[in-house]
Length: 337
Image (tube, rainbow, N blue to C red; front, side, top):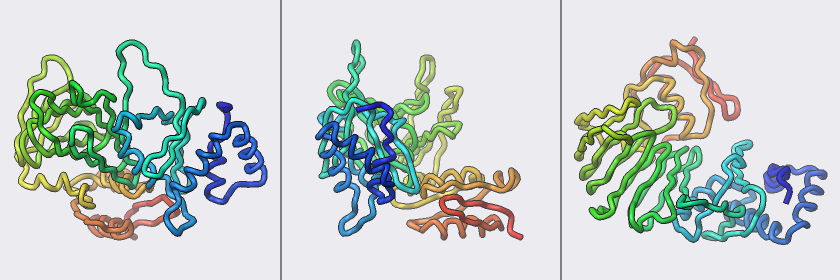
């Protein structure tokens, strides 16, 4: 297979938007390797909803990613080959395809696994696409939920001697406690170690700190570096790790609000409109523009539970006396006239 193959041909083919030239190029590519035809048929079957001509790879990918923690399903995908187009997500693996893997009736094409040198372990990954949540149970029985735009990585040897995971984004963890093999979440320079608990770690890249909220049990929280003391958080407490490594702990009478997203909730607790716009964009997979910097720093408090996008936008707009307009997947907030 050629490295310069245009994977968008598959997107257009499945969406019924391929031109005659597209179809000729796709058929030429399929003819070069019989496995490619099996792959395309598997993807077509997997991403179509029952009794529907619409296809949704985001939904399918969330289902697949929930199984990636199993070593036999570990795959190495070229993340640069993941694209979004007109609300659809398609996942393309890099060159050198070796096998089509069937998971839950879904076929994902994996490239040849890179050869690992030295003692570097193979890594597995679970991901949640924008406007999606992914739920999974790790091999030790720990249950996790990943919020939209998040991913969790860990070695294929997870659970054998250690239980360390790397989080980008936001995740809920209901950990099976094991004193011999502590469960640790590494996120942007912080380490959250389970002491028998349920907790949320929030570590999106745009945030200047990492927040940890404990719903049950205890966790130890510290900076991922030498010379930093560990703080213990108990149920009803929230910890924050700053970029300088300092850790603060506060009692939070409403700590459950940090878990609301796992139940379909969306909570804005005195955050700026700019921060709320990022949350809304991630939840609904839209882009939000704010008319001016003065409006962006206004603070908003609101709670929603399983509300559609227009109602969330109406609620936020009413709270700040502004209005919103929409053009496709772009939303604009501006002062009400």
